[in-house]
Every structure is written in structure tokens, then in C-alpha cells.
Image 1 (cartoon, one colour):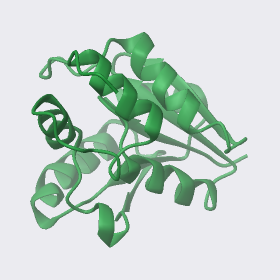
Image 2 (tube, helix red, strand yellow):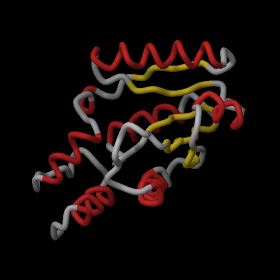
Image 3 (cartoon, rainbow, N blue to C red):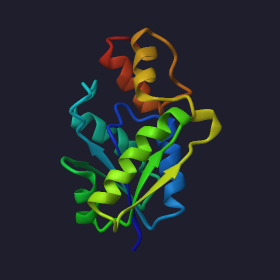
Image 4 (tube, one colour):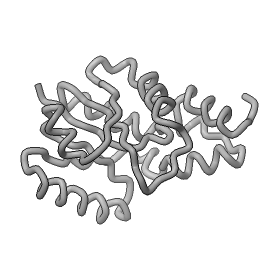
Length: 161
């Protein structure tokens, strides 16, 4: 079984993330959405909230699992028997950072490949950070996130639906 890990903080999950998940299911037998702790970020949603949002969104995809992990990604991938790590590239600005990560991961464990995937053009500008900012300021994020994520954002920012 060919397994891939799609890691991220998913704070919150966007339609761009879902696009990559859906497309990854066509390439791999099993896709694990690995929700990671990122020490350099202050998340809006706690781990349980992020897990619940992602799990609800991936329900249609029977080959997708959602898990929380901590520590080195390549160690987690090895433990899961994954042959690949999926990384999204939205713009040229993502490439340098993602390329450095991929090379370091290869150095740490050459058995796990990094696969770069570009989201559909309509999602290339999306980022969780921008979504949170728009939602915090009362903007409409309905075309950028699933409905349940939009509801969670409004609730988090004390806005009525």
C-alpha cells in the first residue's frame, strides 16, 4: 500500500488544502493528513478543534486518515510506512523554503520522497493566515473554506452566523 503524509498545521483547513488532499487520493492508496505542532506559530484553534475540522472535511475520502503528530516529520512518515510527503506550492515564494525542507528531510531519511503539488489556480493565493485575518475582520471567507470551518471561525471571533 502506497501511503503519503500531507503535513501541516491546518489552522484552519482551507479549500486549497482540500484540493491537494483530493488529488493526492488519486495518486496514493492511503493519505494521512498529519496535523503538526508548529512551535513558531500561535494557533487559533487547539489540536482537537483542528482534528475535528479536518476529519469532517475528509469524510468523503475513505482512504484519508487524520492524525496528530509531534516531532520530526520523517520519523513520523517512517513509522506510518509512508513513501512520500506531500507539500503544496502556491507561489514561487513557497519554493525556496519548501525546497530546503525537502532536502533536509531527504538527508534525514532518503527512503521518504517529497512530492510537490500545486493547487488549482483558484487557490494559489489562499493561506490559513490570510483566512484568519479576513474572518477576524468580519470578511466573507465562504468561498475559501468549507462551511463548517467558516462557522468555527465566526464562533472563534465572536461573530454571529
